[in-house]
Length: 383
Image 1 (cartoon, helix red, strand yellow):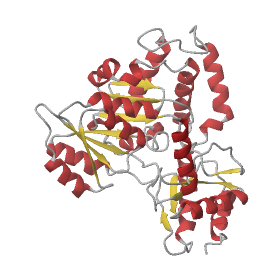
Image 2 (cartoon, rainbow, N blue to C red):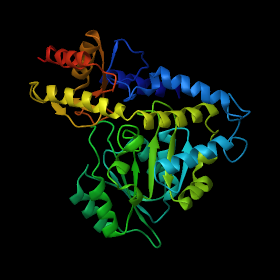
Image 3 (cartoon, rainbow, N blue to C red):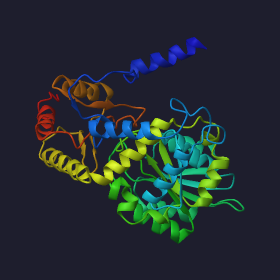
Image 4 (cartoon, rainbow, N blue to C red):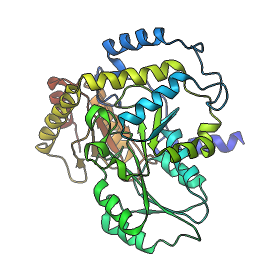
């Protein structure tokens, strides 16, 4: 088997998209998902440590088992009650990661005879979830309500089957918002349910970092919402929120929850402190939007060669589509050499021909850093 593995790696190397682990090389961070800077915030770190030392729990280093065995705790249950109140839901369930939560949700919710309709740009974790289910699954064109309506009209679930529509609040590669109101209106028109992944909107949008659906007043219309904490919240893990029935069902049927060791106490304390900190510092979201606006304004005026596409929006994720692995990697290397850490996103993570720079903006990026990044883009030898 090892020769086959080596052959696959060699194929990746020949096409220029062999993945390797690497460390940051440039001082200016334009590549991490730490949009609000909470992962590096010294004041928050001190609050977490103080709160952690005050929790009267015995298992400090590891949870020791799954939540259904030895891994449950009073603190975990209190945190889930807190998250449910925060996100305006009846109940919440914490997972080890957003990937695990998405995979658990779709694989557990659906069964044979169901139909899953998903935006063609949803995250890989959601794709793994529907592949593990026994449901029929079909994409609809990205943010295209007409195509979604056509797919809903044509959907033919089996006896007793349901239709589930999967969308995202902010798409991780393009950075644009999902069409949440239109999606929900269509679901209600055709009798379908909707779930949403709020991974890249958690912390960034909504009061207290509660995400885009809460900001738009649409949260209660989703069957389930997934909130990921490893991005704008600067922590780790995720939660699914919804009705008490939904959460009780997941406790029984979501295999990544049932068969995984629970998150350690320190991770749970960090989540509580991070959301408390966001509630006390709403200016962080405003600071981030100031950075986003500065970058977008300058990029709109920047001339680029034919075939290079700007994907600008009001989220922290901005994209510059630079077709071709070699050219895209060369641009990223140029920016890193100039002091700006930006990573190239290559096929197969994105489709061939849609390779890109994914520029992540942060509340802590200074005006000089933003201006310098745009100037470095302008100085690249595109020919």
